[in-house]
Image: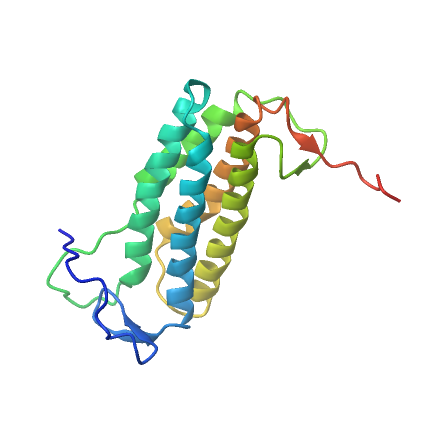
Length: 193
């Protein structure tokens, strides 16, 4: 249960922040950057959802709502590295079931799209443009999480898999929001030479 009755604590005034394990790290630590970028991704999803409220995008909006909740789970997972120590509580972890659901939703959306013959430029509808921002920010979050893991810090496999699938989801979702790809803005190589 989360209880937030006081918003500022002053404990971070020295430039540090606490992990779910109680350990304090500098706010610029790669782990903090990784889950901070996951939070940023979540905010971009909230912006995209301002354009998915109509009946034609209701199913997509429901998917995005689930993703927002998953991103909080993912941030909690990154905030509480598995050190093997007893924390006195069961930390929240991203599961393979969440990854599988995301894959199913990607396949569902992609099944409605014509194959691409060119790269897609970010744009088209407002929803699609915002989903491209989600795609790029989520890819940045993934890069930070991978860097953290490859640097020897603990990051779970489901977290890395979820982040890898997430940008793919946003790509197919942007095409879905562009009238199932009919309104995609396509790259024309060398068009302005």
